[in-house]
Structures are given as structure tokens and as C-alpha cells.
Image (cartoon, rainbow, N blue to C red):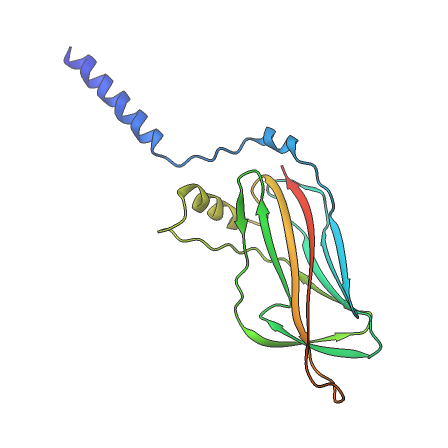
Length: 191
């Protein structure tokens, strides 16, 4: 009798231990519900074109995701100076299956970039994710840690919102800087 009680106690302990572990409810078959709409998007405002692009519609789990934002100046001047935060291009990503957002952090302000007429200013997405061990759920923290491992993204359906937010420095006959904020959205899958 003592042996049966001891074995059932061990089984109960193991079941409790397993049930307390964070789980990732992600199931690859959930990806079948999603269809990639566009891997290139472009917007234009005044003399500026903003383009957001992913090299592929579908990436493998450990494959590097090639994601870029571009600003192209198409005005009359040979070059213009723009003022912006640490980066002229910011990426906000949402993994739709899990409902997780991978946002950007704005660091410095007051940075200047020279755009030459007709030349692409291109910024490649660099992985980063922010979380709080005190506030965020264990599942999100596990996702964040997996996200930062290696070059690829965890499996999922990703929607990327790219933004360029800058001021065009005033020219001599102008009385103020002009503000531009252009956005574009693309999507891709990781299987």
C-alpha cells in the first residue's frame, strides 16, 4: 500500500510540474489560415518615396529574414538633408497567430541623413524585442527569447508596418522645416 501511495505521489508531482511550465500553443497548421498579401509596398508624399519590402513570401524557421525599408528622394535638388530619430526607418512587426507585437524603441533624436536625388537610402531590419520579466506573460517572454536566437524568426504569420518620420531641413528661402511621415505595410510567413 505504501508503494502504491508513493508511486501515485510521484505521478501527481510530475503532472503538477509539467502543468506549471509555460506552453507555446503554436501549431504549424494554423499558418494555413493565412495568405501573404504583399511583400513590397510603396507610398509617396511630395518629393519622397517610401518602400518596404521582404525578399520572400515564405521563409524557413532558421532562415534569415531579409526585410528592408527604403527612402528615395525624387525632387529637383541634387541632395537634401533630413532630420530624424536614431533611424530614419522604423519597423513594427506583429505576429498574428499569437497576437504578439515586436515594436521598435526610439533612441536618439536629432540625427541627420543626406539623401541624394534618385538614390535609395536603404535600411535592413535588425532584430530586437523588448519585454519585462515583471510585467509580460511567460509565453511572450519565451517567444521573445526564441525570436532573438539565431538569424531567423519563430514560425508564424508576420505583418510589418514600416514608417519613416523625418523633417526636411529648411532651405534659405523657406521659413521652416517640413514634416514627413510615410508608412507602408507588408507581410510574410515563417514555416
